[in-house]
Length: 186
Image (cartoon, rainbow, N blue to C red):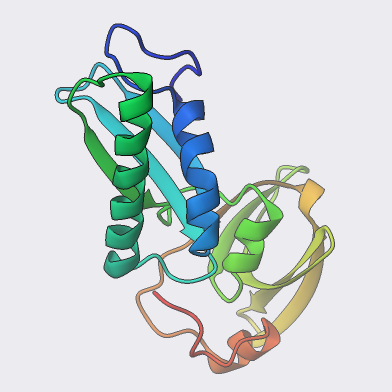
């Protein structure tokens, strides 16, 4: 992550300035600013904004957020002084980013995940409901072709990563996770 100090040699805003500038507008549109990276040494320099929301961040939403971010950065530039030319990129969290906050678990409900636990074990399952600081996980007993729901405290999870699925999920597994199957986007 970039330093929070303004990048004077590159004449760009800091990541904290960009975050502060965009948070309210993104929230108004139903999205969170997850991360901002100012890559001053890239050619051309880049400002990368990672967004996440309850709604899918599709191409239309990315375009809308990009326009809003560009307008806000242009207005900020007129008051802060001329920035060097840069490329603005607004993107989603992507499936490879670990789930790190309760809202990530809530938003990933119905998705397959791989969990690394504090005791060193690993667990593959489908995320269910998040209640307080506990997530329900549907796990499969492949020997008996049955599913079991486990309640796992978030503080027992060291790392959680959404898994890419290439075939449709089992309906019973989705039901146990609290989904009808239509809400899960792959």
